[in-house]
Length: 143
Image (cartoon, rainbow, N blue to C red; front, side, top):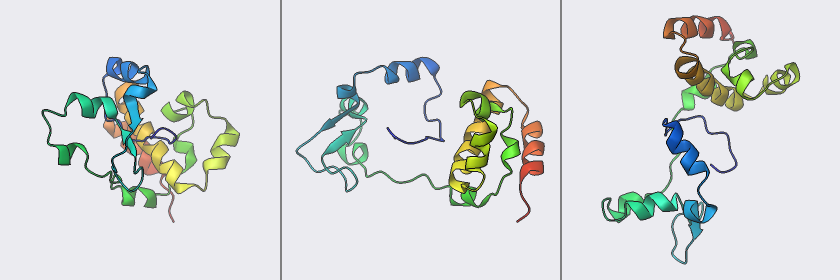
C-alpha cells in the first residue's frame, strides 16, 4: 500500500496513524532470506506488528498471504463525479474541475473515492446517513 490509494480505514485512531507514519522505514518492512509470499517473495510487510505479536499470534496466521478486499460490485456503480464536488474528497485532495474531468471515466478510481467520500462525510463532517444516501441516489448514473 506504499504507492496506492487506500480506500479502507483499518486504523481510525489518529494518534496511532501519526505514530505509524513517523516510524522509521526499517521498522515497517524488511528484506528476508525466507520466502514470504508470491507478490513480495523476500520482503516482510508490517514488520513491527509481526515482531510485536509473534508470541501471541500463530506464525501461519501472522504470515498469511495477502488477499484483495472483496468489493467487486462497488466497481459496477457508475457515479456522477458531481457527488464529489465541494465534498470531503475534493477538499482533502484539493481537486479542481480538471481533476474531475480526468476521473470521469475511471470507475475504479471513482469507486475508491466513493468509499473515502462516504467515510469522510460520516465521520469527519458528521453528516447523517440519510443525507449521504439521498445525495448518492441522485448521483448514480442510469446506465
